Image (cartoon, rainbow, N blue to C red; front, top):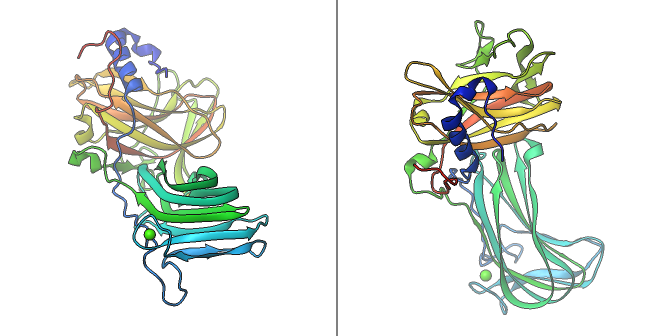
Length: 369
Ligand SMILES: [Ca+2]
């Protein structure tokens, strides 16, 4: 996991390199969202009087299969009921049992989720599985995960799957599936999304800085954003605010001769005072463009202590750069950097700032605090 040091800052070398290495080895799994995501009737105990089936759940029994899906009050793992899917003649399609959980608000940051359920099977000749899929404000960030295939005959077993839901997630769908002949019982479905993994209240605070504000005619950018010019590159890159894929994004267009170009905005003071900060930035590139997330640290006199840059990433669909940085103790002001370091185009749609998490911090060899 290399981390590059801007060549002009090499004189600061050793301590910065240490900082840089620390930034690279700090794990990035502090979790912050407190999403309101509740599965309705997860134990299948609540019976809809009209359908006689589990309230909140949708049965999908395609015409191509012969079988039944019903509540079973003789075999269950929780309460007094389970759902039983029995397929006697297989078709090309799966029988499905689904529920979509709509979130009260789209996720603003990645959020961990633990999905679990219990299965009991009798002579499943095809595949039984639980598929989790999501809807996202940004279609490219929707997720689809098969938590694992099960077949044969087995007693109640618990299936558990951990995943991190992408920012922008608006809904999470549980889809139990049975393909081929056999009988599957399903019970005790669960969706757990803990608010935080750390107890600190600060963990729940995130700040987003994007490009949707009014453009300042002096800077050509909204809010406090400034174009980041590098020595010798003053006239060799272009930065424009534009609408791309439904987002307000800033385009950084490389021109011959430019090494780095980019954007900078002050890191809010509350974060700059912390020892660790985590940044997320939505980016997209074209051609040889490379999106880079970084920090520039300044001392009390406003002199640069150097830059900490994560490796560049190029991808022609929207993605999220995610990096945790250790802020040097001498830093009194810190600026976020969103750079294009490749000979192509990079777009950024904003940055989200989270308090970093020192819990998983691992000191490298030879480093003493
Ligand atoms: Ca039950």
